[in-house]
Structure formats: structure tokens, C-alpha cells
Picture (cartoon, rainbow, N blue to C red):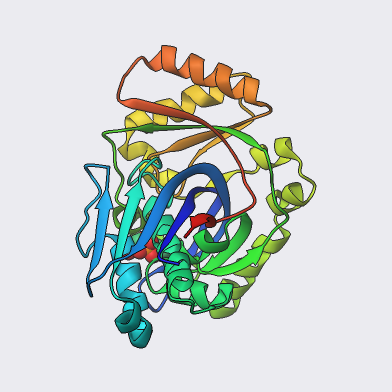
Length: 317
Ligand code: C5P
């Protein structure tokens, strides 16, 4: 086949705990990641050249070598040089629906789609864990984005343990279009403020990482208890992102005041904020109320829901 079209869903963090510094300069994390049905479409075409090209309809998404989707294709070409010279280059077209620089893994899920798509395009037959291993070279969230669903992520975020699928939990997601938070900035600010409290002893470090498996929110997920999940949401990065971004804090507080909202939190390093609700009707009501209350065309709101998968093939021919 010469063309594949894939769906690349966004993720939210139901839980993000920063444990300490790693030797590689990253942070040791304990997270719970969740795919949602807000998704980009990624098309891959065999090009009759030896070049990799990225096309995107979003003005803020670079299409050069810095684009993570481009880097994913380069990684595949360098790992599988024979397939690359046999099949030639790839044209990658990304139709963006996921807000950019929002803490929703938009770039990571595009890269994950490119790994899955090129594996199909070149008939490599890689396993999911081989794809995840390749993905870890591109970014901490890329491995999760491949299989998606609901999972505990530890280490840099690349060590995954699947959790029972949390299907059809309704959410309202909000993002100011003109606001972007740099993830390196958020982690660096956290380190500057809380670094002295980081766990340094190796044994405590491991214990803390393992503890997430028994956390109350994990039990609530296993029981499909939406109320329990909503009460146990946690994200350490809120401690640095909310004080630095008053608009995000205001949005978060406004969500929290709505009687329909069961729980609210920023996703990843923000600035997107999500709110968990009981039903689609409640989601529509909350979306409407927030739209009226904030009354700013810069604010984008989505009604979305949790899904049990990551990258999915739409068509191939
Ligand atoms: O892995 P990724 O490129 O998505 O990470 C973006 C940035 O977030 C890193 O450069 C680092 O500053 C920070 N980060 C971290 N610890 C992690 C994951 C990300 O400090 N486990």
C-alpha cells in the first residue's frame, strides 16, 4: 500500500507526580495518562523521492526538521535504511484539531502516528513494544500515544503499565488559543522551587514510583468510579503553572465552581484545563456557562470523552 490515514488522539494527565531528578537530566515521574477522542488526522504517502516532507494546516506548527512527526520519520529512515531506500521518502500531512503547546501531547501523538504509519507503509511488522522503544527516543509521551487508553507511566514517562479502559467519561476541555506553556520551563521552574524536597535516596525513589500502582485514583479507575477519579486528580505542575498564568487559574477556579463539574485540573504542563462531568448534557451545559462567563473569543472549548485506544488506522490503499 502507498497511503495510510491514521487517527492520532490527544491525552490528558489524570495524575502527575514529580518524584525527583534523574541522572539523564529529566524528572522521575509517576503519571496516569488517558487518551481522549479529540484527535488529529495524520496521512502518510510514499513519495517518489528520498525526502521526508511535512504539511500542516496549522500556522503555528513548523513543517521543518524540528517537527516531531518529521523527526519520527527520520528516526525510522535511519533505523531501517534498506526499507527507506526501497520505498523512498514519505509525505506526511497533519490535519490539526488538538490545540498546540497545550499539555495534550499533540506533537507526540503525531510522531506516534508516523511510527505506526511507516511501520505499515514499509511492511516492517514491528511489535507495539518495539514501536514504543523507538518512540521513547523522540519524547516522553510518544510511547503512551502509540497504544493509548489508560495507563500508569513512570520513569521519564516511557515505562507503561496499562490500566482498565476508562471509556466514555465525559470532559470539557478549555484552552486559550494565544497561550502556550513551555514544558521545559514548567519542569525547570518546579525544580527551582521544590528541588530541595526531591527524593534523593534510591530506595525511596523506587518505592515512591511503585506506590502509584496502589494509589486511590488507580482503585477508582479499576472500579470505573468517575466521582472517585475526579476527587483524586493531581498534577504537581499546577504549583508553578497556575501562579504564572492568572488566566489559567481563573479558568480552573470557574470550572471548580460549576455544580456539574466533578473534578478539574490542568493537563500536563498546561495551559489546557479539563473538567470531568457525569454526562454529555452536563458537558454541554458547562461549556455554555464557561463560554458566557469568560466571553473571550480567544478561549476554545471542547466537549470530549475518554477513549480506550491510541493510534488507529482509518484507511490504507
Ligand atoms: O520528553 P519531552 O521532550 O516531551 O520533554 C519535554 C521537556 O520536559 C524536557 O526537555 C524536560 O525539560 C521536561 N521533562 C522532564 N522530565 C520528564 C519529562 C519531561 O523534566 N520525565
